[in-house]
Picture 1 (spheres, rainbow, N blue to C red):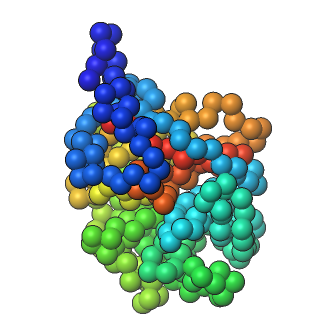
Picture 2 (cartoon, rainbow, N blue to C red):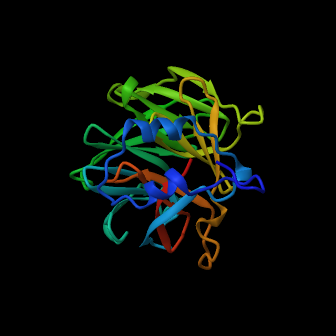
Length: 282
């Protein structure tokens, strides 16, 4: 729907959906409507903040992931990388373990009771027992499409694959059990195409949601919705208005995760003092 000036109308079905209680289930029709409804950067704010949480300003966020009622975070920095458990209700720090000083941690995802974490330029990943973070993690090596860098990672359940980004415009696919062999090799690579037909660049933190890959574009406030099979971007969200009055020292938008509510996502950024629960419009 549009108004007389051509801008998108956020009332009607959207307004009804916004009033749903947090426990309300998502219908097939809701998901289908979201999938087929176009969203472009020119549409402006196409999301609703439904909650604010605290977030550590010392957390150089590289990845967020949620599973079994627990919110996990991977933070980066040479000599300061960590794996963290956060309270999903208020964002407070529950547990933190360091990553070896030689590694710069990157994205992380939950898989089969484990946390799978990438590193930036070392081509080394770590697998942690999610119920015992203090145990020595399993280490594996990997390949990507750009100098074997690791940026973001998410789990594609339907294909039992990991999808990985490396700062290029590609989605890289691994078999999900590859880490058990000690090496995760590229199974296939899918190039991502923006709505204007240009090649995507700087794909970073990613999350799998509603059959699509959500990716932030490094150094921007843009969130892309990508078909993982074709690489076509189907929606482009402008998150500039997520938090305009950021704390001193806050960096770029970085950190996307599902939550206990199937319609709500967590968003934060590097060294942000806040984390947000967000409902994305269509």
